[in-house]
Amino acid sequence: MATIQNFLHRNVRARIATLLALPLAWLLVIYIGSLFALFITSIWKIDTFTSKVIREFTLQNFIDVFTDRAYFNVTVRTLIVAISVTLICALIAIPMAFFMARIAKPKSRPVLIALVLTPLWASYLVKIYAWRTMFYPESGFLQWLISPIGGTSPGFGMIAVIIGLTYLWLPYMVLPIYAGMEKLPSSVLDASSDLGAKPGRTFFGVVLPITWPAIIAGSVFTFSLSMGDYITVQILGGTFQMLGNVVYQNFSLNLPFAAAVALIPVIIMMIYLGSVRKTGALDNL
Image 1 (cartoon, one colour):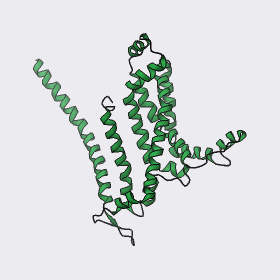
Image 2 (cartoon, rainbow, N blue to C red):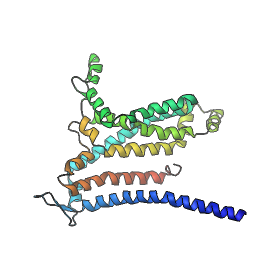
Image 3 (cartoon, rainbow, N blue to C red):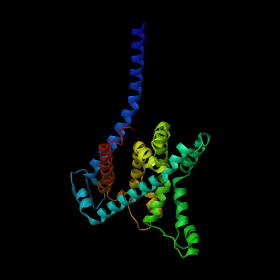
């Protein structure tokens, strides 16, 4: 009887695994297929007279991307913005998540989570245009707020883009860190306190190392989303440009070149994920 039950259980588990594998395989095919199509497009030519794509092999698109100083500067600016947004989100999200997970009362935690998620319910464009009205150099809210003390609004540019992207992607950093800190055993904190560690020492020596994988998970979201954004840059950036804007501007004019530029964030993210994986931070996700 036990043998029959074990056989049935194994059969059910095998069928469930098969059902789950099908959508995962389909997602993998779409993801890998789209990246492969992007790479293939990047090694084609463009007819400069008709703007039609010529399916002939060439590396000229990559040569133009990696040898032109202007595109190198755009790549560096994109990295600076993505890193800045990730660091600012982490500095804000870590204390927020710690308060939500360890200090706030259990009954109030669902309310706090809902408040963190509330900005995601609003339209992307509505939020960015709201920030645009605040950053107007002469009549914006920031100008009105700091003009009495002799300050001026930063206007449109890199600072406005960083602030706008930080506002957009902050929930994607808060939620993974909150999930990691919520699973933190209370016995670990009690043991640290019993051994004489002060709250600051416990936080930096115990809480942060244990929740490091959750912080890395949040950084993957904020870093990748910031690198690929171009709408926020168009609305808040003024003359400021990032890689996404270069892809958008060349998409209809020179598709192979746009594909070559679009591969730069993909390569950067692969390097980032590879370096993070070597540290072991992703093992416990």
